[in-house]
Length: 506
Image (cartoon, rainbow, N blue to C red; front, side, top):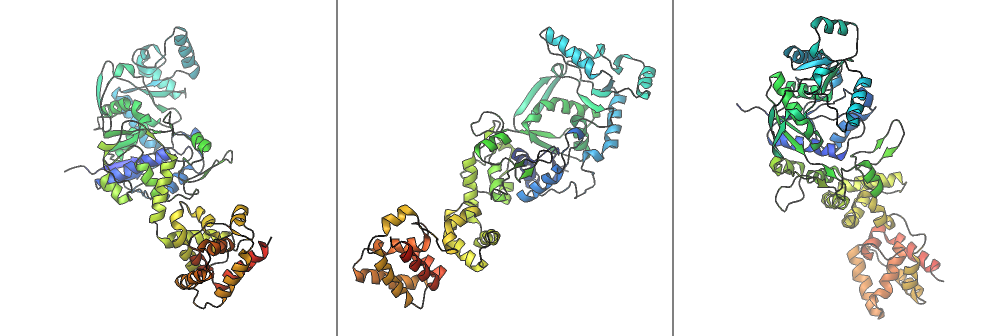
């Protein structure tokens, strides 16, 4: 029987979730759902010195906004919880003791001062100090003291760490699902710290124990963890466990391709690198988020999917369901993916245009209410249908449609100079008389009456329609003039024309 696929996203609550983290969560989710498996969220909060208040909720809220639900995790308890490492201390204590009993790990009592002195001594010789197979037998640890002395030192409360005992002269053949096979000699590794006397494990131990106990079959994580792969494989072997398959995802790079994308890049070039806005609880500094900048979650998810993966087809727009069917770890790139803010806006524009008019109208209606614009949802929907195609964000709609809701209080100077001539006021007064007689003020009927009237006067079409537009809009922009007039109604149209006559007379 094939083992059920189980993957996890395991962020640390040390601040806001970067879009690189969201992409890791997305790839895990897509892989799990494609194979009928489970997607777990685990909060890796063993390093309490870096814990940031509110970060865990931010992570959960970010995944929820992106539409990436987890099957098990905090608040969705399964059989292998708890899902916060700070609540699993006893589990790690028993497992590190197991390694010590097997001779796969040992106590080390070296003080930070002693280790710093060793590093300086090695650096003076042009060498780099490594606490590992070549040095550990000469250092302050339990490998060369009696059991009695060890127990005495532990009982006295002397500070210690537990280090992994790296095998000597072992060749490791490691397979990565993205990069293929990697060969590493254990002689280049050091004896990593697994556990501290404060009762908390390091990332390496907690990560391996949790993945095993949570029955994780595939570890899909960022490439920054690739150097840890040899140690993690050795830990699985030391415990006598079967290791999951590993896949290390490429970095998301700066727009120029030089280095990892950071918050600083977003601040400098004016784009978010976080899914939601984040207020630093210490400094009060607010970082912008895709949600608050007006992006649709579907656009952000589609954009992130393509940062490091390609379906191998011409298709670029994918729903989450379509991404699930198409996703393949074999099509994840080895090289880093350059972040392109313009491509992100392109995705937003595509999804904005695909969004139902009603959904956009509801968002715009809320914005208009905040601006204290008196209107109704049916009218807003009518306006949205007309101007939507020129917008990328809801925030663009006011610039494109303000004249549907408010009469112009002044007129764009260059436009006024160009279209409002000496005889224009007389022509527009005649237009007011014509419009006053029209009962059916629909767009089609306005056209059927006004256009022949212009022809009968023997005037150029622009001679009437351009000042007509200027009067209604305040500028030479906007949709069809007859649509605007019909939308704002007969009384408002005539009112605006009279205002223009009065104010553009000079």
